[in-house]
Structure formats: C-alpha cells, structure tokens
Image (cartoon, rainbow, N blue to C red):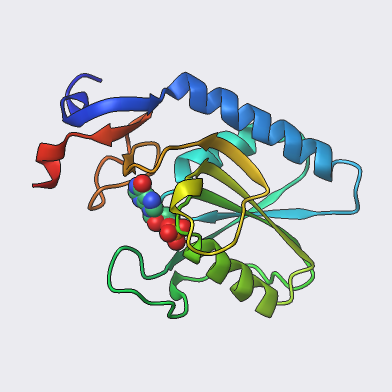
Length: 183
Ligand code: IMP
Ligand code: MG
C-alpha cells in the first residue's frame, strides 16, 4: 500500500478508525431499529458509499434489505439548486418503507436534501441517513445525517469511496491529496 500513498499529503482517518466508527454507527442503528416495527431498507448511494455500506451492513444485528441509487447534485460547478440528477434509480418499491440512506459524505448538504425530498415523494414511511463523513463547515443547506462516522475539517478528501476525478476510491483510508495532483 505504498504506491498510491505517494499521492497523499496526509491521512486523516485510518482504516482502523473508520472500522471503529462504522461499528459505533452500526450499534446505534441496531439499537434504534431492533425493537421497533421498522423493517429498514439500507439504501447505498453510489459510488462513494460502497465501502462504508459493505462494512456497515456486516455490523448490523438486525434484518435489513439493501438497495442502491446513484444520484448527483450540482457540486462545485456553477451555483445551482437544480433538482437531483438520477443516474440509477432504486429497484425496490420504497412506498411505506423505513429507509436508511447510506452516504459517503455530507458536504454542502445538497445531495442529501434532494435525496430526502425524492424519497418522500416516493411515500416512504421514514427516512434516516447514516454518513461515513460529515463536513459541517461546508454546509450550505440545513440538513444533518442522523448517524455520523467521523467529522472532518473542511478539506477535500479522497479514499474509502471518496474520489478525485473517479480515482482514489479504493484507498483503505481517508486522506488529503498532495497539491501537485490537482495541477
Ligand atoms: P454535497 O451535495 O455537497 O453534500 O456533496 C455530496 C457529494 O459531493 C458526495 O456524495 C461526494 O460525491 C462529493 N464530495 C463532497 N465532498 C467531497 C470530498 O471531500 N471528497 C470527495 N467527494 C466529495
Ligand atoms: Mg458521491
């Protein structure tokens, strides 16, 4: 694991820290859902939340079913609050289901906000969100994840699902890229 590391300025969250944080999130979700009538759907947002989803589902001690969605909001580009871009829709009927959105990161909050609106239009019974990373200083829309793995400073992160131009998702940790990579 020394080859890709050459591009990394610093590691913010090690693989071990991420696993511990995910375990804590899984315990909270298990506690909140185990005695309820809830029959949750774990809804993984592609592609970034894939590694978190894989770890989280293995740590949940309740029945869950899984589904996947791929959405984008206008991120980083020109200022826009345009609606969600749906690249891949869910396959299940989510009407009257308890949905737990599994996110990689809540940054400005646009994507999560759009996703919650979209799911409510689908008449879900409830919607909660588990996000591996929260970047509270970057928030532009007032929205919060219900379950948070780690809290990050306002830096651009890569690894454990998070990408820079589609690369670095496969790093087992979360870090910050060296400046020369952006140039
Ligand atoms: P938001 O809509 O601004 O909250 O951003 C959500 C999406 O932007 C995430 O699902 C990521 O795909 C992407 N994103 C936000 N911050 C970062 C980052 O630090 N590194 C990589 N992707 C990010
Ligand atoms: Mg993403």
